[in-house]
Image (tube, rainbow, N blue to C red; front, side, top):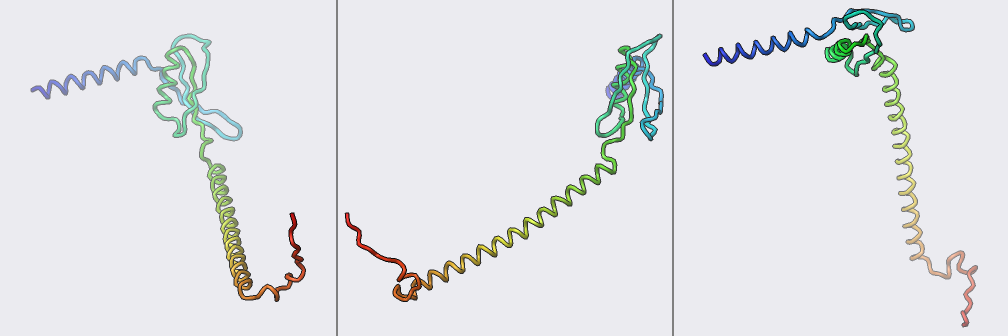
Length: 160
């Protein structure tokens, strides 16, 4: 009995809130208009009464013309504005996807070039390390008298 009464009260409150929300919202009219070479669709909300009215264009977010955007346009019409909720489809068209793919390819190509440059640098560093070690080994094996530049260096006593 209690659950039946609770469900009755809940359904009554939901229907009253739905009726009150729809009683104040302006009705939208589907319209289409020319934008460049394309025909764009939208919903036009007009306030009750005789105009002229100020007008607004309601632009949707990333996910398109959804119910929330339509409700906001309806609320603006309830406040005395003509509101056009336009379906703008400029986000994530082919050119944007193409540019993202080209940018990813460009960064991949730069990474490949940097990888080859890093490998060449490591090979050069290893070669210099080997030559340095061979030079130290040579210095220990050859006496100072046999070195090529030993005779060119003049040692003179330092006097203070």
